[in-house]
Image 1 (cartoon, rainbow, N blue to C red):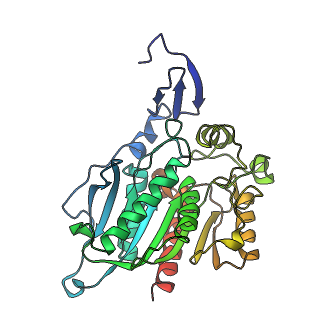
Image 2 (image 1 turned 60 degrees about the horizontal axis):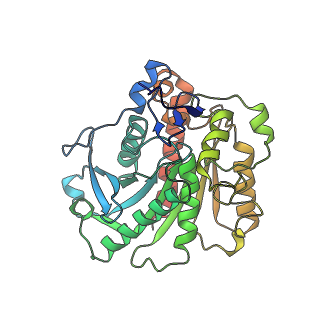
Image 3 (image 1 turned 135 degrees about the vertical axis):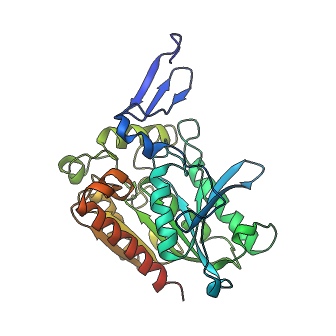
Length: 338
């Protein structure tokens, strides 16, 4: 219940309300049938459908946490090293958590399908923590993996991890984090850890000026123009616009892509995404800069369709495209694993 002393200064769809005292309410107030997708899933040591999960503190000084998805190993493969998928959740930098069911249902599936360990980061959220806070958290998680690879720290769940095969993946705004964490990593010594690939899925790459797809594509439950404008307005550094390098890495305010040291990328887009035009601008800019980038297009679906468990369960087209997405990511990892 909101105090009468508070005044609402910003509201974003059914997702978020900001008050004049700086407090933020992220309780879901939309259709109740959606509620289960935004509920946290408790970690479980036992294997459920072949996956166990655990939350650990990756950085004691900041309190940064990560969730680990560990696939069950068959006895004959017990000594096999498993690749790592470092995951950054979406939510326009303002909402959602790594343990929400919408992520749990898809990343347990990805962990099983790829036989990889998924490490999902609990990023700080705007507007309390504006960008680059989420980028910093993503990079801190990567440095934590490096410290494990160097045996400076220990995490028993990652004792069978292959630190020579680390992939970064992110949903929506998490795709932005993939780009910027990888770009920062290109200037650092991560050895013996090696970044094998980046996988931005429907990244939140936009410009201040509306694109044609923003004007013409249908809005969806997981992305509306209201969300694009208000979430990013609350997230980018004060005084910045959507042309900021974090939200427009292919724009004039961003460092030239030519100068970045990047691993192979798989850019995943949905044909009916509101922001597909600017995502494709990024793809073309990456190709022009001679970067190793592949494109996976899911036809007939909208932004973050695979996270919508209701659609995945009830709509055969969404289910089929989700399988195509998982298979495409699996193949990319396989192609860049050796």
